[in-house]
Length: 282
Image (cartoon, rainbow, N blue to C red; front, side, top):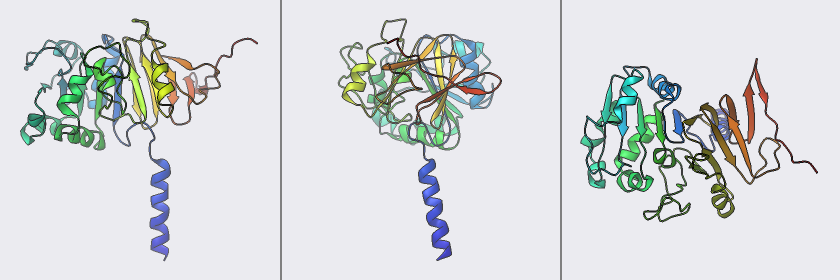
């Protein structure tokens, strides 16, 4: 009986500690597009294990049908020290379902999705062996990231996934890879005047946490917590109160930390301290 009771308590503990939004293990680095800040690139490389760590770059969201190991997008990574890079790409789901195709992921410590149109990534990789191996990468403590379209595909609810227009928030593709659960991520937020667009999604799906990221800005997610890095702002959209704020969205800058489950923001000083919402005058 004692063994049964201990086992039962262990199950309860695991259940209570389970992440509501982020991965149970591993790290996500989600970038709002136009990634040029070396601090973001180097943070990803460090999380993967350093300059010699095997990193896979996926350019499938782009317009070209073919990408090889001379892909121009590797330049930024090499300029920031990465030396063990592999380009992985297909538009054929049957290929994405093969052992040969996923071999680089099994050897990798990090996978990064480049920008373009996120529905192309969903069409190629969603619910394939590639998708399974990406989850396995996180489970062994690896890092997965993406910029622009590569950011929105990482969530459970994918915005701007319409095949005809990237202006449509809820399009003909809405299911992402789901590494960030119960959430949606928009990108190029302030640079393209998109700061109000996520409200449509939150109104229709109030259970979701909305996150907007401006260009050259990223969130680094571990479990249910993320840190903001880069040059601009991350914006939270939620039907639950956020950090005491009365508005419908909440801005976070570089150095801020956010607990997605508790909807609490903190800022680093000598120690982490709460960030309070600003209420409008009566």
